[in-house]
Amino acid sequence: MLDHALARRLRDAGLRWRPRAGDRFVIETPGFDGDVFTLSDMTIEVHEYPTGTELGFNGTTEWALDSVAADDSLWLPREDQLRELLGPVFRGLARQVDTGSRPGSDSTTNPGGDPDISGDRDGGGFVYEVTTRPTRGDTDLRHRASVAEDAYAHALLAYIDASLRLDEVDVDVDDEVEAEAR
Image (cartoon, rainbow, N blue to C red):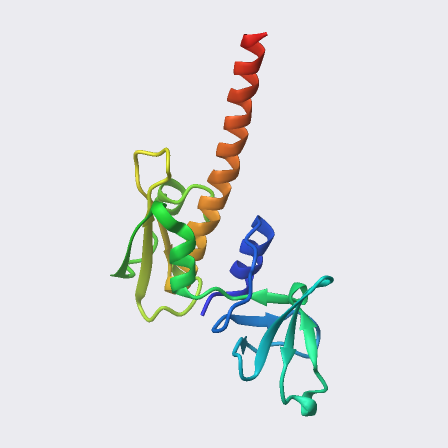
């Protein structure tokens, strides 16, 4: 399961959740520490209102919880969802024996990535490496973690960051073209 801190970083980077059956989430209010919920049409349903999305809890009177705003929840995307979000930049996932950190590997193959993420959680002696190739790039980037979902999340964070920077470059180029036209 995706590390909650990485899920927060994805949300803060701009990843938006459109709740669907099968999605996992946590409620970010006191009293729900460590509880992971799964959306299901039988127990937790999504209700769309003009004021926002509510997650309705059915048959939970013992919890005294009828519903919670989706904004008060943190989505924990699954591996398949993270892979789908990477779209055309995704090249592959490999499971490898963890031989320890390679000097400079995270800073050179995962620009902006966390230093030495290979030992961030118990991977049982293995690391997962997600390979991506940026849309306008000609070299592959590698994102490593001891849990596959975490490696995908690091890759998605890099993709979001690169997309934001590309938008800034496109705006600068468009401004220059407009300036030249005047």
